Length: 103
Length: 120
Image 1 (cartoon, rainbow over the protein chains, first blue to last red):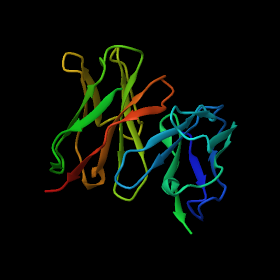
Image 2: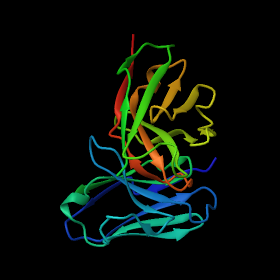
Image 3: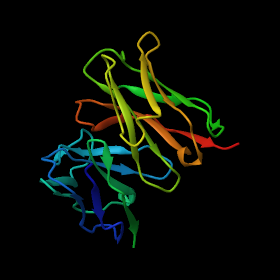
C-alpha cells in the first residue's frame, strides 16, 4: 500500500505569510493527489484535486503542484480563516495531517 | 446542490455491528457516475477511508477493514449504508459519508459527520 507523509506536522505562521505543505508518497502516484482543509468540528473540504486543479469556490491563494512522489500545497498569503488542519489524499490513503496555527 | 446527511445509533456495544445510513438530497443517488463513500476520524486523529459504492453496486473497501465492512445502496430511498461488524473501542470515531465525483477517490461533497462510540 502507498503511504503518504506530510511535512511539517505542525506549522506556526502569521497572517500574510506564504506557507507550503509537502506530501511525499512512498511510490510514484502520477497526479492523483488531493488536498483538504478541515476546521475543528467540521467535515473536511476539498481544496485541490488532480494535484493542481483548484476546486470551484476555493480562493486562488491556494495552489497545488507536484507529480510522482512529491506534492506541495501553497497558500500565498495566509488569511485568518486559513488556520486549520490540512490533509493530502491519494486514492484510499490520507496523509497524517498538518496543523496550521497562528503565530 | 447535493447534500449528504449521516444517521444512525451514536452508541454501539463491543462485538456488535455498527450501522449507519447516508441520505442524499438535491439529486438522485442513481444519476451520474458517482461513487458514494464512507470515511472515519477518531477524536484528535487523522482521516481513514473506509470504502465506497458505485451507482451500479460495485464496491471498493479499505483492505484493513474489508473483512468487517459492507456498503450498500438503496436507490428507492436515495440512501447508502455502512455496516461494520465486530466493533471494538478502536472503531469509535466520527463517521462521514461523501461523494466522489469522478471515481478518482477525490471527495467533493461531505456530510457533517456523526459520532459513533463503541462502549458497553
